[in-house]
Image (tube, rainbow, N blue to C red; front, side, top):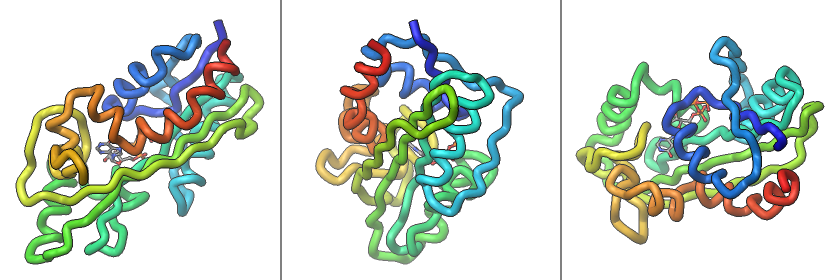
Amino acid sequence: MKKLYLASKNQGKIEEYKKLLLDVNCELLLQPESMEVEENGITFRENAIKKAREVSKSMRNYAIADDSGICIDALDGKPGIYSSRYAENDKKRIERVLTELDGKENRSAFFIANICVCSPNGDVILESEAKCLGNIIFKPRGNSGFGYDPIFEELSSKLTFAEMNNDLKDLFSHRGQALKKIIPQLLKIFA
Ligand code: ITT
């Protein structure tokens, strides 16, 4: 069975990928805890490529990474690529966003995920991007998920990601949708 390294240290993402990749016939492994990839790109795409490339080259195996984040219209797209660095933990990141949106009527936002898969020699072999539209609510709702999930209300269901079960989040989410687009190719590579 071919190995696929998940180039991520985010436990929330890791749990989602374990489920999303269940049908792919690979041995899913995590990047070594000691390995740091500097996210100094200026786009989600650049950072996704960098993470997948560095891990694939160093592990000499296939690697998958995503760079993702939440972009809020009233904050000119922030936190965007800085979503994970917006404050020191999830609670403080949520507090910062809610404070910055205080008094603003426009609460529209989207989550975006850029996925990249690299071959064992570091070549980009698959890329995918998807967005999920919604609004930032005034107070967190729900207990599932991670990151900004409790304050992001998905547009059509009116549920926050933190109120959705795993299957529902995968159906609507930026990550679930971006991965779905490349599942046929992944099934072939790892047949
Ligand atoms: P890795 O780079 O190790 O994968 P990271 O957390 O640094 O972990 P990113 O640079 O891609 O990953 O930052 C993504 C941030 O965007 C993440 O830390 C969350 O704050 C937020 N985020 C992305 N997807 C999310 C989701 O599905 N639900 C909630 N927040 C999400």
